[in-house]
Amino acid sequence: MSGASAGRADVGGRDRDEEGRARNARPRDGLGRPLPYGEHGVERQPEGVVRRPEESVAEAQELLDAGKPFHAHEVFEDAWKSGPEAERGLWRGLAQLAVGLTHSARGNVTGGVRLLRRGAGAVEEWASSGARPRPYGMDLAGVVAWARELAAEVERDASAVDAKARAPRLSGRTGGG
Image (spheres, rainbow, N blue to C red):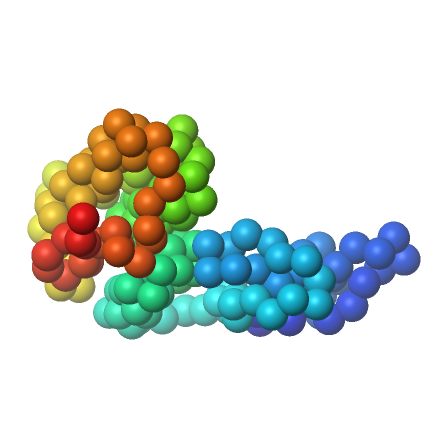
């Protein structure tokens, strides 16, 4: 089911999905910011999708490369919630990194820096716990270095970054400058 599939409103006018859960049906931009009703937005990622880990990495990378870190976060969140317990710290950390990039691109310096550093710490902690250093082809040391470098840049410059230009490469080189 997709967050974009909010199909009805209740008596109070709140957007609801098919199961009656509150869901904001407003369209959103590529960074997940709500747009006015009636405007064309970016299609939302479906929620609760169970993917193979390699599919999660590939789909998240495509979204990051397209400048949609908010949507990549949704993919990582699905992996975190549906994956094995032993990998939850990894996927949660990656989701935090994607949200950190989202906030940094939105100009939220404090939130961006905090989440980039928190995510880097979580990924690093997971990798140092005896887990594989390159799970599913990901270069975790490179991703952690990217996040820390970006956090320092965002903190120093106190301005929004271009999410597409600063997207990490999960499987190799880090994003551009």
